[in-house]
Length: 437
Picture (tube, rainbow, N blue to C red):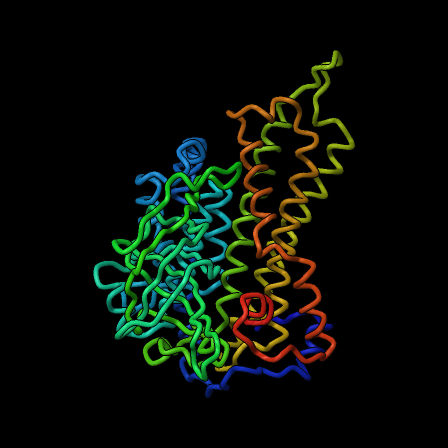
């Protein structure tokens, strides 16, 4: 079993698993883990086969502002769109580290493809936690069914017979153009006990409108993260997901998906997936920089190879080391989390908040590592035909995503490591992001 660093191990000795129910050890743990990792190796091989194709359409994807059907078909053919789908619905159910590695590789070829392929899979993972009746609807036609999301509760919800009515606008719904559903967040004013209650609501694509004009950005353009508009869209009760069920480990989907892959918090896998897109984009950008530097010469009269510049060499060494370092660290942390789940133990509070801090740090380090070498890329890097400016714009955009909150997560991580109690659970979005694992 993979170990975490000694300081973290010491913290785990006093760590509790508040909000989680311990489960008996599975006698099939080793067999399950082996099957998942075999499936993961297959996924990575199939992903590697489509990377040249995705890289070749990178500029087109950026210009159009969404993935082409050809790119979507390639992603589906690789298996990435069913990587986290439960096996009984035709999914691969790979281990998380293999999934993250696949996302990194896709993003190294095309960051927008990595974002859409990764994030839509996390939504499928959430569907596996929801009511089995909704799972049957969601995967009825294909294990590659997918949903976009807009979790910020910017729209309104009211009760209706058998369910709820949603109205308003929800923003930044990545991959909505290629999705069959959208999962949006909203706060029910009169929830359990008369208090506000935060839920996710799965809305059929036919019951919403997509505002194409809402997506006009400088980076990650190919994600097509457009706004959703609804007017009294009906969502039956079984298509909703209560955040309290995630926090208390009482997800209704456990009746059919009580397996290790589905036993760690949604925020952890969501944050880490986005971090892996940043790591992949930085990796692709650094490789493009290396290719360019091998042939570029100084045009200020000397004609000397740019590769001989010692200051450039130092920046490049630092950038490569930082990006590769966070990539390896994410794998170590998630191997430990997954091994623990396979042995029937829930991830500890410390593991969960550490994973989210590392994800935020990886996002920031990826931008910083590439930005440092981009300063030596030369004037030609600004040309729209040059992939370096595209990687830079994408990384800059991801650095401003809410999951890159390195400073806030550092505080939460240190509170756990120092044995300080987290604040009591509440339904606020900020509490969910920072403390719900």
